[in-house]
Image (cartoon, rainbow, N blue to C red; front, side):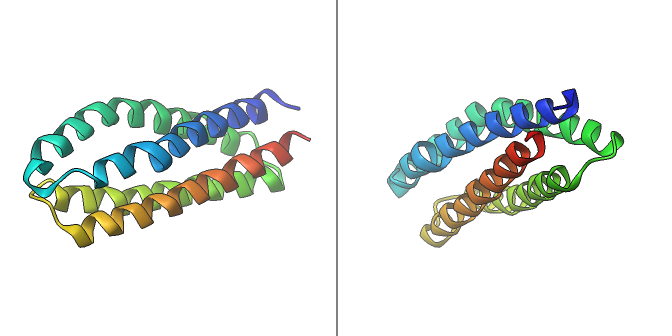
Length: 135
C-alpha cells in the first residue's frame, strides 16, 4: 500500500461519509421546506454547506492529483474516474441550486434529489475502487 493510495482511500471515505449525510439527511430536510419558507432555508443551507464542500472536494482534488502524478494503477484509475464523475454530477447539482436560489420549484427540488442520489452512487464507486487499489 502506497502513501498516495492511502490518501486517496481516506479522501474518498471522508467524501462518501459527507455525501451519505447530505443524501440521507440534508437534502430530504431541505425538500420538506414549504415553498413560502424556501428562500431563507435555501440560503442558510448554501451558506452552511459551501465550506464543507470546499474542504471535501479540495481534498479529493489534492489526493487525485497526487495519484495521477504517481502513475496510478487500474483500480486507482477507476477511483479517479468515479471522483471525476462526482464532480460532473456536482456541477449539475450546482445549476439546479442556482435555479432554486431564485425561488421554490417543486420539479427542480425533485431533480436535485435525483442528482444527489447519482452523486452518492459515484462517491460509493470511488471508495470501493480506492479500497481495491490498496489491496
